[in-house]
Amino acid sequence: MAPRLILASNSIRRYDLLGQVGIIPDIIDPSNVDETIYDQSLPPHQIALMLARKKAYSISENEQYKNDFILAADTVVAIGRKIIEKTEDIEKARENLNLLSGRNHRVYTAVCVRDQKGIFYNRNVETRIKFKLLSESEIHLYLNTDEWRGKAGAYAIQGFAGGFVVKLIGSYTSVVGLPLNETLNLLNGIGFNAQNKSKKK
Image (cartoon, rainbow, N blue to C red; front, side, top):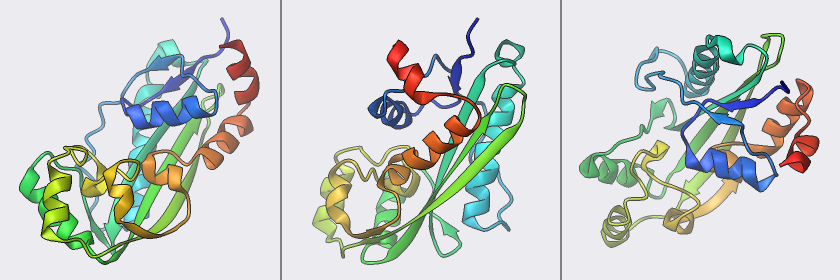
């Protein structure tokens, strides 16, 4: 059986981003890693990398995938060392958006892949973003969209929150959930031919 690509994520955004470059994962198998448990003494970029690795390692323990390629990722939004975590609570989301309003923040997306030999490789991409000063009305309207639910930083840049951005330095797709250039380089580097794979679909 030909090696498959296993996406260790249930993120629709990551699946769609891969589809934009012609890659359709053979299997979607989200890891059971708790993203809220991490060493708080670590800087944000290391937390993103640690979580991405944990997700990839977790899925790699499945014997069914021993000859397959595995792809995992994690995104962390931070102001300085303060992480703006995902939330389902509207008041916490309001607090987060007020914190981001008019300020610079950074988005770290770490990608971890495993080759057919069981060797892991990773990349960490940093993107700097500045939001405009948000009015209470803008925040209220955005919270009503529910786009913020379950999103790192309590916003989705590919939605209405894209209008909040006044400056972006780095990778737009990384902020959405997966830095495509770096991910393709990693996959090609471990022998996954993205171009040939897409032609077979």
